[in-house]
Length: 214
Image (cartoon, rainbow, N blue to C red):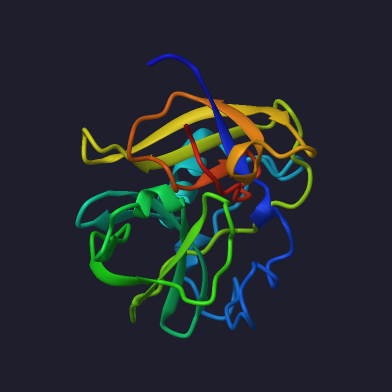
């Protein structure tokens, strides 16, 4: 596949509470996550992870979004009690009437588009599902130290292969004003496949960069 530029949203780089939700009751840390989620960096000084650990981090929070007419990937990013939030791209849900989430342990849950969200014309959507299982959450949503050439790994489910794929790349450009189409402001390079949109994008230091790959 040819090398691509993918545009990722800076919306989630803002502080978590606003997230364009009305009185958001969710957080990144209200639920105890399994000890296996807490991977230590391979380089304590730089905080960087090995490619193998980055794949593990990405796999732990990437889910498959299954729609009756469409589908793609999503990323678990917040929780409260037994409810989990999954961010994905709105184009993943085009024409979809019924949505399911397939989690990393291969469990399938019914999901709903979270009400009272307002992303305007941005290519983002938030889903919610309920489970008694404890799933991993992102180490942190990046809001700093994102520069051109920052290494990243992108995870998502290939539509043709039906399995999760990992693609390495790096941040290629950062545009503050004017925003690119659909509100995307950060571009990265990665060889990606259809179906990976909405999956986790992890920096070399384990931070979540969430957005769209095209």
